[in-house]
Image (cartoon, rainbow, N blue to C red; front, side):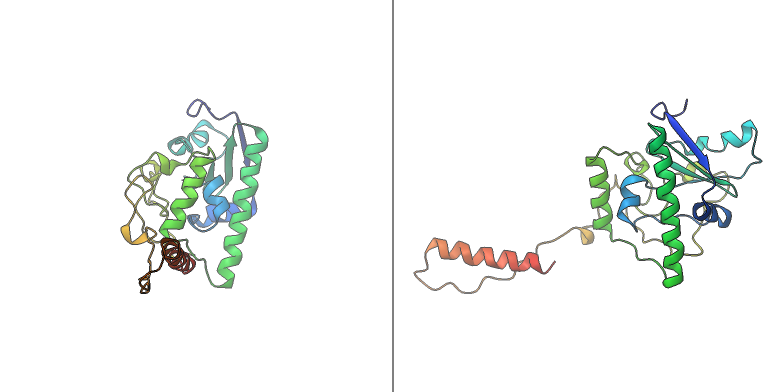
Length: 216
């Protein structure tokens, strides 16, 4: 709590699905499920240490960046935190439910990542709702690549093995790919007969715009 004065409650437990990711050291994919993007964000992996002593407690320190709300303890369990105890426990429930969804999805064939535009929209919503995220503070991390905490890992950055690697998008603080930005592709308006009044002209243009938006 000294490293994060905004934290008032901490929950440590061993939820089975999230802990499985910690045992496998499999990074938890981002840009997949809206609830995870808005309520959690990137979930870093603290290195393993024998439980019970100060060195064990200190493993989480490099990952307590602003916006972090949950940490996987490698080969051990999870730590989640918030302003209230109920919030911290709720985040544990979210991450374990999400990990279960990921495991089931892999059995069905894999996961589908959101595109860059939709991923950015979720982070815009997150900021609008007043939730913090490490990607709001780190300008050299990928949008979906679990790299906001790369400086905190004394071991190698966890690499995906069970799931397809995420797409490479610029970080939230970096300019968006122009190809990902939404574009209104308005079809040419048909020929307007001579003598057509302005109201009819406006109606014709409006119909073309609405038809174009309906194709997005």
